[in-house]
Image (cartoon, rainbow, N blue to C red; front, side, top):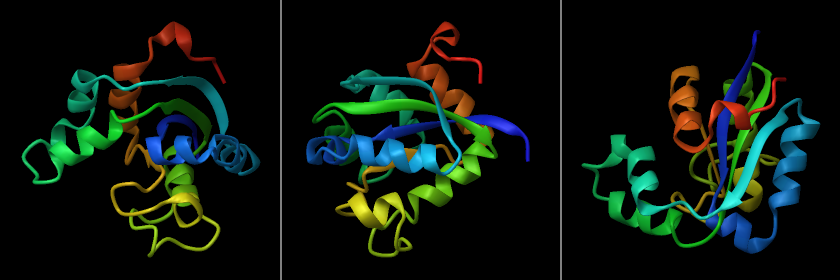
Length: 141
């Protein structure tokens, strides 16, 4: 597999629980490197842009409200097959269905508050990274 970059968010519920270090450690011990990271609040405008594909779904307002409710950690992760690797490490969207040992099984509270987000494709990763990071903020890995 080729080395690539993907986008990840540690969501407000996981930040509030104080598990940022555990989640980052999970990524790093499983072959992903942090190429860029920011701790901060997601603005409503950027959140709506980020989740634009869900705009017509009934949960959109609740999703935006949750994601802007507290600080998040936005990261660019790099490594061999980073998109797929990140998705494997996160586990199923529903924490109750996620395999034991995955981030969502360990730290997710519900389908919506499932601790982390990860890009679903290299194309999505490029789009998502561009929303939150300038090229000069990302380390060449």
